Image 1: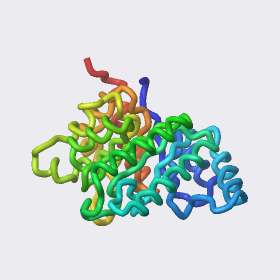
Image 2: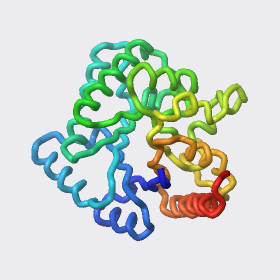
Image 3: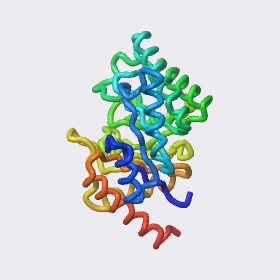
Image 4: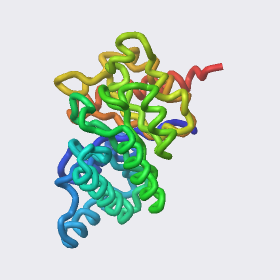
Length: 266
């Protein structure tokens, strides 16, 4: 890998404004967040969305499925089936725009995993990953700050046993309990399976107020060095939806990459 592709989220509602912003600041692509309410409810809505996304070319577009409350391993079988259907509908849409990557979550927006089945989650995620693979899409499980994916050992097991890939969120990893209490390091989310991590979410850390940008390049340095050790992690999403914070982070990431190019590791 010669260097990561830097991507920004779809934080502008107008596609052409988003494309213009991304190209003006040299981003390589867009990480497009889909929510359940974004999924088309008719063929006409689908055509409109597909046409809208096509206007982002030649920028690369990858997808982030933000589906809180949709748990494929819910203890209620009807809710679990509904969640799987929602994910499958999103994958069908992604395949129609020639998308090849989709980041997903387990436990998104939950304070605990009570009412969620571990075995059911494993089976449901395996089913989603299998369906995606049939359409040429790679499903990437993201580590969250809490829940099962906030524990490196369980995150690794979920990826290994379901055939999923991984998205390493370095802001979530920094603030999860297992890293804060010193029992694990951020690297433990990735190094058991470095070849399975395909993308990263880059910002300083997640707080109650949301994602925060770094105050200097040093805030990110160790974690960016980790990302560079991952052979297939070539998609770095600067996951901030405030323009000032996003551009601040872009400056620091580029400063890091420039220094690494000027002084490569021996």
